[in-house]
Image 1 (cartoon, rainbow, N blue to C red):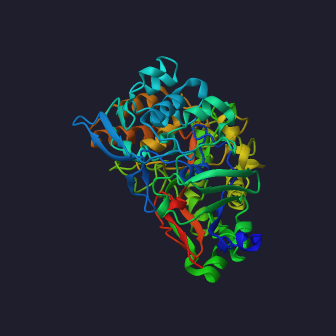
Image 2 (image 1 turned 120 degrees about the vertical axis):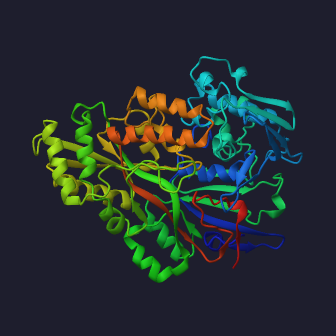
Image 3 (image 1 turned 90 degrees about the horizontal axis):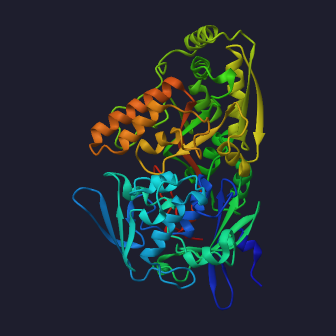
Length: 522
């Protein structure tokens, strides 16, 4: 019998005839789904990165490298991409991966019946948006299988980030026969057929997701870890304890209350790296008490972002003054909230004046602050409540379990203000600003509608000149920050615990760490 103690330690164990390398890997939470057309969160993306492979992938340095496609050509006008698929690409059941698998996947995600929250990720593909809105047929999508190993994709306009976009799970293929045979059950263990380095073995909610190395993966000989157990840890302190006990080899996030302790006791196993992400507060603008932009600006002005970054998050976050984080590509002239450099006391005075102008008497406004489970989020909301009290706003705090939290917001849940975060899927401002287009019901949590904003985003989507396009996107963000249906408060850094035994983990701005690039040394 195999030693469960050694399995729990995430190391190598041996039997008489074989040895397996097992990686116990902390993940933020359980997924709400394993249907990659329905996924939307970072923890789900971590799973999809191991289960599937797109035309291109990001390696352990977040560099775009060939995946199923061994090569590609881009037309001179930037509108047509022709991918040559590798001959040895196979699904986990041994079927060959064909160009038609990508066409089927791209049509499925745009099918209105799929109700994919991330469908607009692939809107650059010709006719994708019209198909998703029910205005055109699936067959009109600009994706065609020329033959089994040649895929042609036509775009609406030149899209400089298109290859990077295809590394996202929305760009992954799907095994058509499995979907047709099992329907929505195609994601269950035993039914799920994937083409990545790993295949699904079991899923026990609140315990672990077990993936086993896919023997049919084209690069299987270089995949050093045989089994990866994704273990959900909404309580970061619990993952820390398991890490110190040697029961997990990595934690996907840090308990920032214990940052000083971790740095002192775990040294270079504590990884904090720049990250392309923004931590923000969606505000339900259709509620009468929050409908006036002056009220939303007053709330934003009262938030001491430096205190949150330094004291609550212990230096693992940066003060955030825009939705688009600094350092992003294709954005030469970033924009920030205009009171970025004001002293907090001056901001509080200005906030009180705005509330007075909006007809809000001191002590008359009460706002609910909602957050998902996690000590860092809880402490952030507690601090926000104290800050809003300084300008005469009363608050109540509501906590929700992580698995249903984001679905609640997507489905227009009854909240006042809530916590959200967005991590860039590719390095371009459009990936942060598209969230708040009127028709993006999957991610426009505040349900803000602004025709001028929508028009600017549409114009940017058809502008090939990067400098001109960047200026249009800047105008859109200026409008967003003027109306503040969302209040940016922090920029992310990625925080992880990584055992010295785990090799191949490279800190990168995307915080992408596919298991296929790693190995374990004991």
